[in-house]
Length: 423
Image (cartoon, rainbow, N blue to C red; front, side):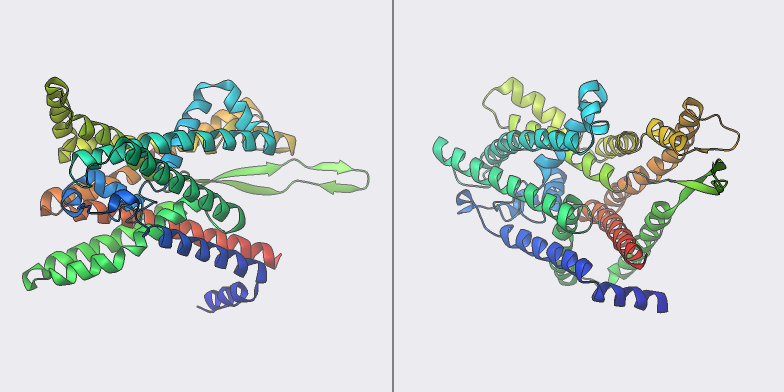
C-alpha cells in the first residue's frame, strides 16, 4: 500500500507525466464529444431495432463507443485504421521490400510505412462508409437518400474516421499507451452507465443467482487475464568477460523475459474488425434486387450468424492473429544478432542462428499457451450467450477482456515512466 501511495505521489509531482496523462484525458473527451455529433443522414433514423440481436452491428457499436448507434461522424470508429494495419502487417510477411522498410530502415522507414498505412486508411474509410450507409438504408434504419446525399455522408464519416486515426496517433506520440486501444477502451467504458441502468430496469429477484454467477465469472476472467499478461518465460543470458586495458567488463548473468501474452489485446481487436467486414457485405447483398445473389447471401449470412459457427471462426481468428502479431512484433533473428553484438550468449547455445532458433522454439511454445487461453476467453461469452439466451453477454465478455488488457498495458507503461524518473 505504501509503495502504491508513493507511486501516486510521484505521478502527481512529475510535471511531464502529468501533462501526458492530461493530454490523453483531453483527447478522449474530444473523442466522446465527436461521437455524439450526428451526420445529416441520422435525421429520422431508427437503429435500435436493428442493433438488437445483431452481433455484427453490436461488435461494431462496441468498437466505435456507441458512435454507430448515434449514427455520428465517428460511426466507423478506428475500424478502417485497424483494417489498414492488418493489411500492412500481412504485406510485410509477403513483401521483402515492405519488411525491410519496417524492420531495417530505422525511423525513416517506419515513417514511410506509417504514411502508406494512413493513405490506405482513407481508401478503406470511404469504402466502408459507403457500404455501411447503403446497408443502413436498405435495412430502413435511415431514410432514403439521393446519390449526392449518400456521397456527402460518406465523406463526412470517412473524415471522422481519419480524424480519429489522427487523435489516436497523437495519444501514442504525446501521451501514454497505445492510442487506438485507449480510444476503444474509452468507448467501452462510456457505455457502462447505460448498461447498468438497463440491467437495473430489467432486474428480477429470481435472476440474482445469474448476476452473482456472472460477477464471479468476470472476476475469474480478470484474474486470468492479469496472470497470463504478467506471466513470462525467463531465458538465461550471460555476458562474456572482456578485458580492456586495466579494466575487466562483462561476466554478468541476467535473463531475457519472453512474455506468454506477447501480442496483448491486439488479436481480439484484429479478429473483431475482420469478423465484421464479410458479415456487412453479406447483409448488404441480401437486400439486392437479384434473387440468386439475395438467396446465396441470405444462406451464407444465416450460416455465419449461427452461434457455433461464429464462435469457431472467432476462436480461429484470435488464435491465428496471436501468432501473427507476435511474429511481427518480436523478431528472434534481431534479438540473437543484438545479443551477439553485445558479447552475450545463452548458456549451452551457439551464438547466431542457433540462438535465434532456440528463442523462436521457446516463443512458439509459450505463444501457443497464450493463444489458446486468449481464444478460449474470447469465445466464452458466446457460450454464455447460447446457454443464457442473452445476446448482451457476447458483447460484455469481449468488452471486459479489452478493458482489462488495456488497463494492464497502461499501468505498466506508467510504471515504466516512473522508473525512468527515479533513475
